[in-house]
Length: 101
Image (cartoon, rainbow, N blue to C red; front, side):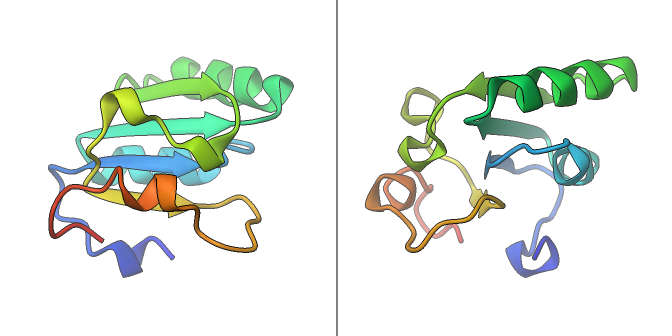
């Protein structure tokens, strides 16, 4: 899934579904900034605690409905939806930078 984004290292990526933070950490190693949204508050705080403890400083966290994305910090160079979703909401597509995938 990460490889499909075709990341080069300078991107700003929106991740929907932080979960345990594992995928967030992978993204943080590969890009300039990660903006991650998790709907379950306890999961978000645990992931943040672990990743902050590991020294990650290029991750921004938000607790909320990821289907809304994070419009105030758009556009993003890529959006990774790691949470279950029947369809990709239009709100996420509109937050992509021109030509981004």
